[in-house]
Image (cartoon, rainbow, N blue to C red; front, side, top):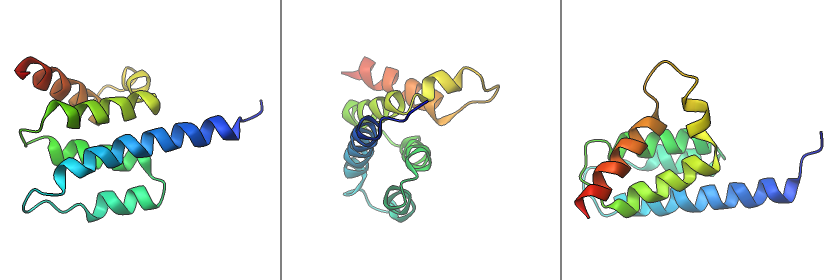
Length: 106
């Protein structure tokens, strides 16, 4: 099996863009430490960055756009497919719940 490096890079760029756009929603909030998330992004640990952003946003009343960016990142990383095979609640599950709740508000 050959890996299409261009497609892989394009997918990574899209995922990174969505995660960074979600992170931007948190930058103006007080008492939010984004340094771990930024470090994950800088080291190409996109799954960990996703988990971190979901965790940070879990207790905040964030706009639909925040959760939409995380949803798109999860789709790009195929996290929803993987989540069905795990018996515990994942960050992808939490993202879906927040996306649904934010959608209902708008």
